[in-house]
Length: 151
Image (cartoon, rainbow, N blue to C red):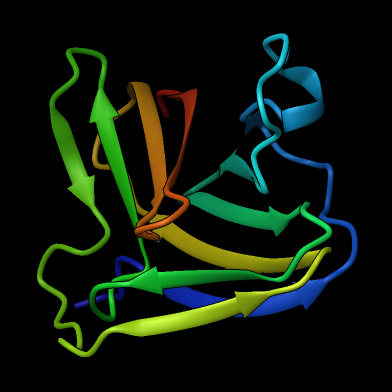
């Protein structure tokens, strides 16, 4: 049986590849409310459709202060694919085992958490990818709509 999904977690510093079929809006593109405090984390979800759907979820620390992120277990993130009706058709964590130990990550300005997942669709159609950083202090969710073509 072939491998249907793969995952990688890495910490990187620097710019992220700007290519992709679908992409969530960057924080600089989102209007800030007057007097609102800037979020310390930026999230970007990049979706590329080929024989498989590659999903890159990158979270960048934008604050000048050191930021601590706490996770209640080994599941630091989640990725879900919804069909056009809003029904989940794939969930990255389904069938996986995670440690029950709490985790903490310390990020400095410019540090990134990068998660790469792969989903193999079974039929064409319109879908939405939802990626979530499961940090207790600073959860982030990004959504991207995309289409898997026929044929």
